[in-house]
Image (cartoon, rainbow, N blue to C red; front, side, top):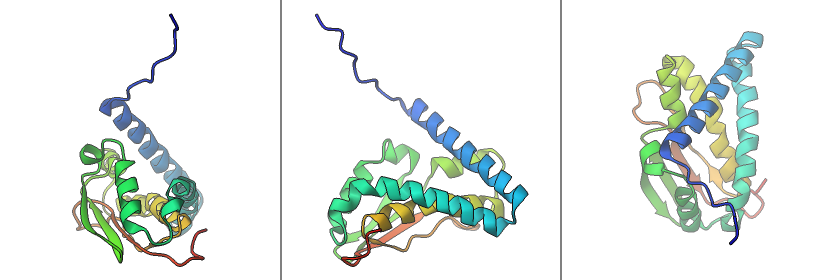
Length: 170
């Protein structure tokens, strides 16, 4: 008899807790950067860091770049754990010309709102964190034209990805 470790099952509660921790880290780091610099500089610095994280995440999508939008979309969406509960993605377009996904929820934004962030403060956090998507898709060789949440809008980010050029992978 072997006592091989079994693969642990991650619950929705655990995953939500991990997103809550990530949201708090982003929020507190952004607060510290705003205390030391003006808002634009804080957004720039946070965006650089989240872009780098996205670029690392995009490595697994490079096989589809620069133009296989359908395969990219399938791998991206299938790689989001508990996607319907946490993000509620709406695939609005997926063809050879591009992909568009509207997220109707975001666990980061949900946690920031629960912490009392709203309006411009919430928009700045979303913009800073949203650079992760640009890093991910651009590093995989695609053109990224997404938008982060803004006051007055419902839902959250809207991802717009188009084919890149043969030289667009970072």
